[in-house]
Amino acid sequence: MRYVFYLIVSALIFIFQSTLCEYIAIAGIKPNFMLIFVVSIAFLKGNGEGLLAGIIMGLLQDCYFGQTIGSNLFLYGIIGYAVGCLTDNFNKDNIVALVLLTFIATLIYNLGFYMLNIILRGYTTFNIYIVLNILPELIYNTIFAFIVYFVIYTVNNSSFGRIGRKHRF
Image (tube, rainbow, N blue to C red):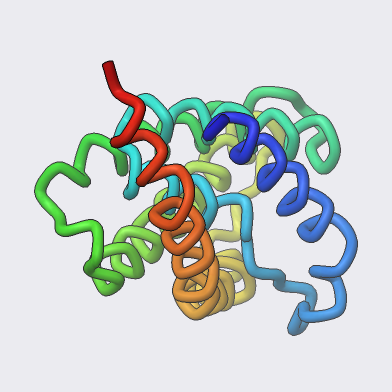
């Protein structure tokens, strides 16, 4: 049941990212709700489900937004797995830790995406990329991480958390 919820939320976030997110863009920069979702799932559930969420969201983003399939899938999968491995040391109720991990994951995602674009397309203006893309997205993702994590945390603890504990064999 939890995986069905993840698929539904993934589809809703994908639809929101590809349609309505255009209206909250500032200077062409949008928050990356797909990355925030991956970090939130990895933070709450660990590396296995973080990797799965990263693969699903990366594949959706590559199929719809990307020119090459695999770059977002690879980056989201690595980020989901890495954040999931780090979360054993954090309290799941600590939203500051999630926001810090979202900040770091956004930075790693953008630097990795830039590196892949250097390899695939030959981009070279790193200073401009930092100022125009990385910094605004870092700020955006950090702000929206509070909202996305609150929703996922509330839904996870209210329905799936109790069901999963009651019905374990």
